[in-house]
Image (cartoon, rainbow over all chains, first blue to last red; front, side, top):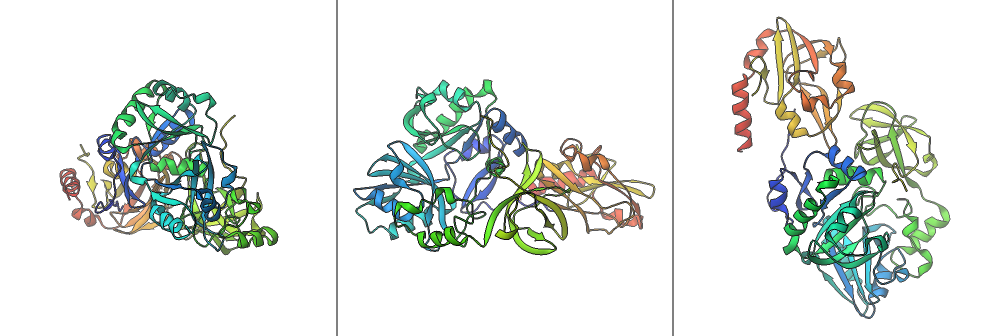
Length: 371
Length: 129
């Protein structure tokens, strides 16, 4: 068999690189960064997050600050969701928009004050996003790429609040989903948000990179009794896939509109003018040509990223993300198919390296956490 | 560390030859590199395999890896246990998790394979590259 190793030349590293190496993590290239894909193993890490808790180093993500008298107006113009609905210390999931109704990136907007916002964006798109916002800044607002000022850790899983309570005095029961606060965790001040990309309850902590090892080690120590383990990008991907969250570059790209991607819920067409609104309005009225669907394999085989989707023997689309689902015990995936075929229950086939293997369209999300 | 009675390939497969039957699997090094193995695609009994050509795949959560046959011959048996429980490749790659058995067409093909000591030296060399 052929076993490949990643190229290490010229990749960015987070402040925790040495810690990951010492922990025996397998490191891979992701979005220009050298990141841990797994420590103990993807399956174990995935199950830890679903049943206990996991700790992720997501410091490769980017942060962009938007401040000024017209910060709100700028963000309203370049994003799809309604920024005006945010209260201080509230966050929303949204997309930075192209004129053609597609996303430059998907991201989170956190409101610190009416004239002060912090965006969390994808690692691979940080520079692109920053340039895009700057280019459209005809407003009285200042935009700064502050990514180097933050490390970011995600603590995710049903036991995450229990664990965090040991290392932070923040009022966690009152911190609701998609709200954040200034908090001290493990003795370090930062922003603590009840957000995440796993489909579980959890938190994301933004803080100065110089304190990274201190926070990482203290968090892992505090979570030992609960079975907290470090989790890499491999399980981060299988977790978000079970929850049917999109990944930029797969479900989202320059050619796919938000409505095609099932993201009408973050398209607030009535908020006023924004980049791409015209196209989205048209699609809202007339419908879309293609639609994002979820499938599960019904025959032996794993339908992976990039494999063709066949209906009645004809190629109609591609798998955008496909993988085993460690918690569900199935092989699942997301794909775009022509809207006329997008019915739950429909049988499709995935071309798995030359062989047509049967799958079935299912409801999304694949996994929803128990209440 | 690597069983002495097996022979090894550069692509990290092993073969145990008993008379004219070869039992083939992947090495401990291979399973370590792959991570959690979740799926195995094998030929059927009666299929033909050729030396240095792919006869199936081993899949981890993230990746698909081709498996290459060290020898030419006819598949006489496949391991049903490894098909239904691919994770045993991670725990017993040299024993319980054998993949296929082949009736060798030409026993001389095994002369170019590595001994356990050669294979250990080979993977040490690769690590330091």
